[in-house]
Image (cartoon, rainbow, N blue to C red; front, side):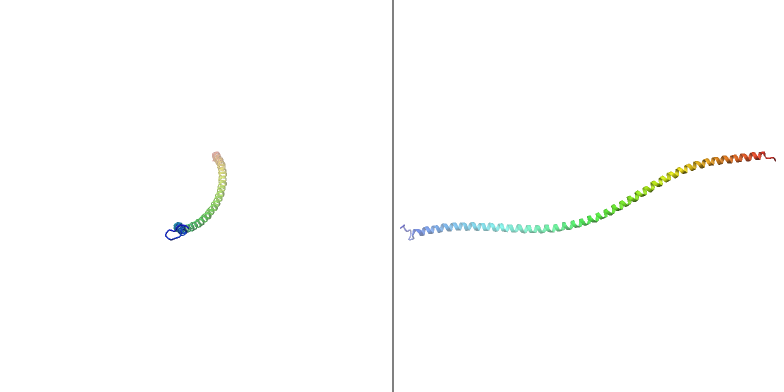
Length: 155
């Protein structure tokens, strides 16, 4: 039998040593696990803080999105109104252009008629001048004949 040191059997010392080693190992594992737990809790806290910030940012962005959507709808409404006014103005422009074309056609017709009448007037004026000359000649002839007759008449 092995020798006893201090009155305890050898296997008790071995068992005690194994228990001490196991306790140290388990203590070390426990400390590591506690450190990992602390690290994980810190990470969890950081993740929660990040999630809260992200949620706040999301809510802020949601408000901005709603505002932009509202602005877009307002802009679309104004665009539709402007488009409607533009369509009306284009219709009015087309109507005015058609009226302008008709007026130009009437003016062209009146200018042609005026040119024709001016030509006829000049022709008639020329004929009037000719007739006036013939009338003046005839009057002169009549006056001449009256003088001759008056001179020939016996007193």
